[in-house]
Image (cartoon, rainbow, N blue to C red; front, side, top):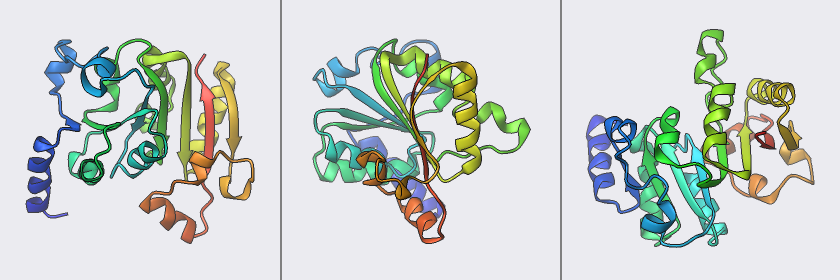
Length: 224
């Protein structure tokens, strides 16, 4: 994407009512006004809040919102030029249960309060295969603790990925740390019992993976 295109998207994001772009200082100094008040101040209802971390173009966030009007969905990514597409689509379709936040995932506890979130989706994250990159892996022990701090007691986690490595690493970690694995499969499109919200939504990149014959994996779990 050219720099002109990026600038255009950044400017549009600033006008979108469904895009929130707090500064790092605003978050770390606890000045972010929506923390703990997303239901009251932004969505203006008490529906469950569901996050998609590393939401990319926002396709999954938007499609989940279309299919589940009784829930609120927030896509989170540091790259605003990417989720511009999802934000624009949500605006055009007048989807009032969608928002996007431009921030780093490691700051998630500054964006949401304890027990504020009902579910978290992690879709096709970078597996960070090199050992020195493990601290950036979105299902490592530190990240799971961050998620636990904002999730409701029975809050659900979803990991959907084309990376067998990420699937295996996460499954091993979950079992090793005593978390509750509710469902896991290494090839969801070959399993008739796969949840509909997992097989019924495909991102642009997921379709490409499937065309290449790559299996898509999925884990649903609760953090203990």
